[in-house]
Amino acid sequence: MAYETDVLIIGAGPTGSTTALALANCGVRSHIISRGNWMADSPRAHITNQRANEVFRDLGVAEDVARYASTWELMGDTTFTTSLAGSELIRMRTWGTGDDRRGDYLRASPCGMVDIIQPLLEPILFQKAAEKGATFAFNTEYVRHEQDADGVTATLRDRLDGREYTVRARYMVGADGARSMVVDHLGLPIEGQMARAGTVYTVFNCDLTKYSKHRPSILNWIVTPDASFGEIGMGLLRAVHPWTQWIAGWGFDISKGEPDLSPEAIIPRIKVLIGDPLVDIDIVRTSIWYVNQAYVTQYSKGRVLCGGDAVHRHPPSSGLGNNTCVQDAHNLGWKLAYSVKGWAGPKLLESYSQERAPVGKQIVLRANQSRLDYAPLNACFRVPGAENPVAAGIARFRDPGPDGVAARKAAQAALDLKQTEFNAQGTEMNQRYESSAVIPDVDAKPEEWRRDRGLYHQPTSRPGAKIPHAWLVDRDGLRMSTLDVTGRGLFTIVTGLAGGAWKEAALRLDLPFLRVVVTGSPDAQDLYCEWQRIREIEEAGVLLVRPDGVVAWRDIEGTPDASAALDRLSAAIRTVLDLQ
Ligand code: FDA
Image (cartoon, rainbow, N blue to C red; front, side):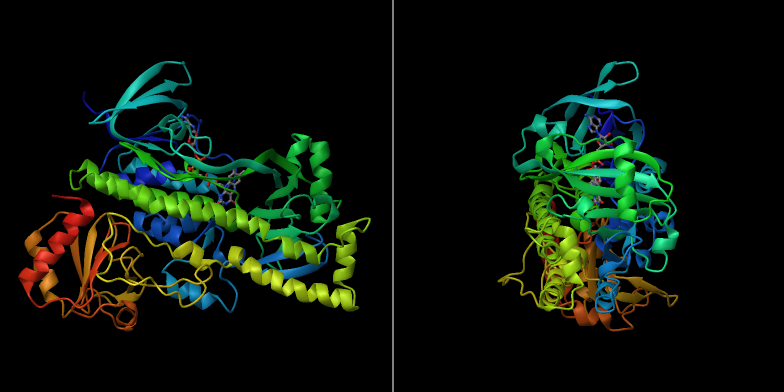
């Protein structure tokens, strides 16, 4: 049976659209379906971290994302306040914008952070993928699938006329979100718990510039008796379009069923969070979402592979949702492309789950832990047993007496704990893969973490880590990152001027997906000596960097012997790609 497409992708959210773009960049056909009429119609994910921006840079959409996003600077302070207009209790420098962290973030990546909502992000990915040949069908529902040794036959339903039809593809991707039918149909193993808490979420228009402009802050936590239920125990005012569109959120008791979501019930509560009864609130939509803590431990079965919220389901705390989806897709895209092109054996696709499932588990646990970590902060703002614990807690926090001193002192430690949510560059950037597509160093010792693994990025060229960022200089004197001369759908060998044997080996191999970068050459000058400082290999050594920027193998010392280099390089490539 002929294939109608190479890869059928179920779901047009960040996971599906990024997968389509990665495939399109490699010249591989994909067809994306979504049961929706269009892409995301509510803000949902915002925080876009450095690693996700590196993925966008690699896929060629970073400039478009930056054009539509709120800037890194606007993400600046996170406030803990009695209301947006009211007096503040504590402020925190977040997302790497603090004086103590800015250098860490700038050193780690050519990309900063930005804040972009899904209705703006998804069309960027969609448009670029479509321009490069991906096809899309909205109002189209996945019904079921069957797979055999050569491909997948999926039954789809056109929601406009109810007609069912089949599509034959070499592979299928389940990117169908947290209620994934594809994961259910495959019977993939899931651990954890769904819907363990609930949140009311209202998007509204209201010009609050006068309360925000002086302290740019996209996240404001409101300490008030009116929104003190649940683990976080505070209300949220989250800027969508600074400072005229917002999200208001607060926890509710799921044991009592769904709360009243009528404007009459919602608007007074939002006014309390703002602290100004006279503002005009135009509600765009109110919904509720549930806090999940669930992860799939095996992401694929045969020719069907799943990614994104389908396999990791967790709350927005730490802002890891969309970011992780995009990275799943980046990991999967090139592996599917190489499999379709016949450049890889079956083990390459198996490495997707080996690499991403541990990351999925880690971020599900991290996001849920970030909610629990509000407890010490809440304790500073509450007096248990008081008639109104939060009101009494706020009064105590300002009291000059010993109870106030103790509460303010405790707040400092409580804020230090929140660094693990709001300045967690390590959580975002320190992924390490162990799989069949990574060859560890001979006699590799466990990595030593020089600073806290969750808070600080640690650059390394150890196999399984992404290539460290360093600024190189091109022939015209322009700066470019080591990330700019690797990736882009190709394998790259990175060596120095003394590594001529590797260049010769690569030329002799003559593979369509292999390029060579010689640092120190006119095209990749290491003028700042940054690369030399962090590369962890000798100048005659070599890194084999995968299309997703991950170091697959390295030879630290190198060899002057071209035929030895050829043997080592071709053996490494055969192992990583599972070629006989
Ligand atoms: P996503 O759910 O986005 O997309 C699923 C796709 O599959 C859709 O196109 C859907 O139409 C399609 N689909 C589903 N079933 C189908 C079927 N049977 N047939 C055909 N198509 C089907 N994250 C974060 O990092 N920060 C944040 O602040 C927030 N905030 C937030 C708020 C709210 C209210 C929600 C619901 C979610 C968040 N998130 C978040 C999470 C973030 O939105 C989430 O991680 C990503 O959207 C997941 O992207 P996916 O592409 O995996 O699934």
